[in-house]
Length: 87
Image 1 (cartoon, rainbow, N blue to C red):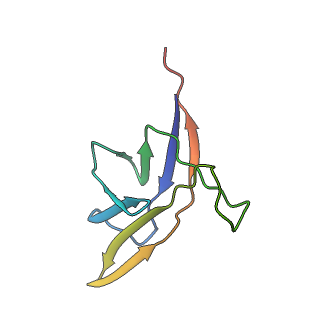
Image 2: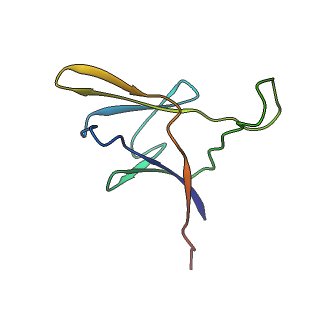
Image 3: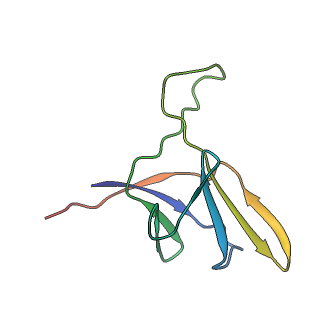
């Protein structure tokens, strides 16, 4: 199975919020944590080829977190892929 992987920002701690296309994602339901990787069991894709409207899938992953009471936002976090072969 191909899984989508998004790394937590280096300064993010364990209290954070994740959004895909502006929709809140729930840990354990929409993604799970593997070390500092957020793992999604569905393909997330970025269509960076055209500034115009497109029919291609164009997912944006945002991570909101706090560092010393200051809010940070990782907008359009990079998505990579992991191929976990199921046996």
